[in-house]
Image 1 (cartoon, rainbow, N blue to C red):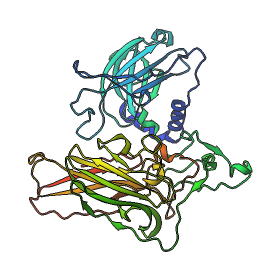
Image 2 (image 1 turned 180 degrees about the vertical axis):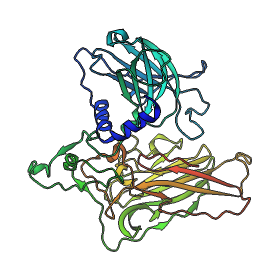
Image 3 (image 1 turned 90 degrees about the horizontal axis):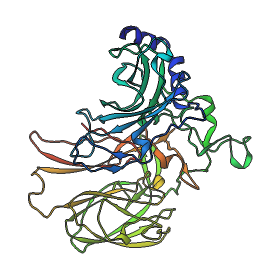
Image 4 (image 1 turned 180 degrees about the horizontal axis):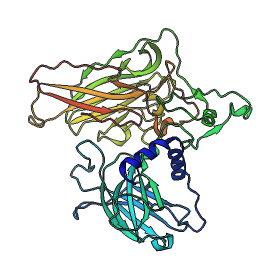
Length: 458
């Protein structure tokens, strides 16, 4: 089958075949004798023999390979090995992660048992299933088949007549999906375990759910059965009185060694795309005040919690006394509504840092409690000289019908596992512009405050 014919076949059968393949890859039925699993905490290997090995979550760096009904006893894994890089993460010039695939296969029968076949060949394809690229010949045992660089992909292993095959024409025997491909829109294949069918928990399945359906991605309709799935916890929406102040843009606070900042967390009103929302803010600002200090200085922050939640302030990335790290239940007791806590912060390192709550951050940080800290270096030539510096906090926010999508009241819902917003924010606003003179050199400091989104900058 040539490439044109392969593409045409996929296009004509997209709605049925593609969904069927996704279901097969996502919900395999395994025989009792099968042992298909990625090893716990695999080592991060490198092509550099002098590089360090680190343990990482197997779910992010290992792909289970599931058998088809042609080889029900076979199984295997494909581990993602990062090529060595001095930066820790290896990407292409386009920003796509690179990985070497290390296969471990067992219990495959002789290819001739399946017909006129002599070899097993591994292939890789994006989720569109086109193009399908050849990885190499393999069999039972361990094999490293070279490097791939795809965001989301499917691994396919088929029996073929020739080791020189350039297209997959034989029967499929093993297949698996990249970990990144499992982060999908709300649909039947991605129902959270902390969800249930029906309405209000106290009324069984006869009541009407208090949860509104989440906004959908353009062109991706929600399946009817999923429309009835909702979190087990009750929804929470932040509300306040009409006299809540409007949010203001953030300002810079320059603190000397020994200086003190009074930091308040409270409710604000904010207009986003013509909608008035009740949100949270440090000192009424989005983002919170930019704290500028010199390297080696110590400051004091008097934090007052005027929100409805227990809270605290975590100084992200700053090496400081453990008791002031701001993690309720670990380094300090939560700061209850109406109460205060005094932080003492020593800035050992230069750079950009940020502060935010570490108590129900799925609500508090999402609604605006975050700000930056810029620590100026002691060394005069620590950075290359520039004409100006800009502090950028990038974020996203999830809106539905002009209001924030509810959070979990008694406990975090899916928001703590990853809540993608549908509105991008720069320094708290949907739009950002900066006038720069020709020849002017600008240093940008970026902070990603989004719940789960990663941003590609260019």
